[in-house]
Image (cartoon, rainbow, N blue to C red; front, side):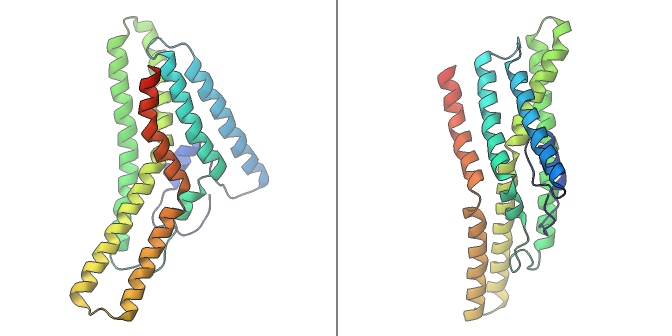
Amino acid sequence: MTDDALVCDIKNVLFIRFAFGFLQNFNGSSKTRRLSYLYTICFLVFFAVLSLFPNEVIYLSYRVLALIEYFILFMISFLTKEEYIHQSYKLIYGLDTIPGAKKIFQNLEYFLKVYFFVSVLTGSFVIGIVIYFRIQDTSSITNSLIITILDRMTRDIGAYSLIMFIGLLYSRVKLLRTYLDTKSTNTAWDRYSIKQYINMYERLSNTIDSAVPVKVTVCFLMHYPSLELSIN
């Protein structure tokens, strides 16, 4: 992964994403990069086999849709190596360095880590309860539970890039608004202050414009429920 200064530490979250098959741009030798490509491709094959494996809990149509969802998220990551996440989280001097920024980004880092684990654990718990009441044969509960939870976790982790981007956007907009309110109260506006504010807004806007993979993810997740209903 790149070593550029980021507004907060997201390495742990990105490493977990890589463990679930979402390619990262690792620094290091060409051998390391080739191994990272090979690992993600192998995980894709593993997930495809897992999705199509006979499962008495989940219908085949749903498992095929799950595989399509993962494949779309996988390809976004594979083609971009998630550079758009690093670019978005890079420190923007003049915006991310204004007073109060450090505390806001510390809260963002805490939110990303806590929400990540809470959402994954909550989803796993709910799935476990559903499987427990749907399966009468206790001998098959363990296999179905592991397969179903892994399937759900993988797709949730894949879509987590959207949460990361929205959380960052919210933090920067909040920071910009706080700065503007403080500036309006304590300082008279002059030509330099207006130009400084416009530059901050443009830099924030540029991070949104460059996040094309996020827009693709949003479009797909918006149409995914209707696709699921049409098949079922």
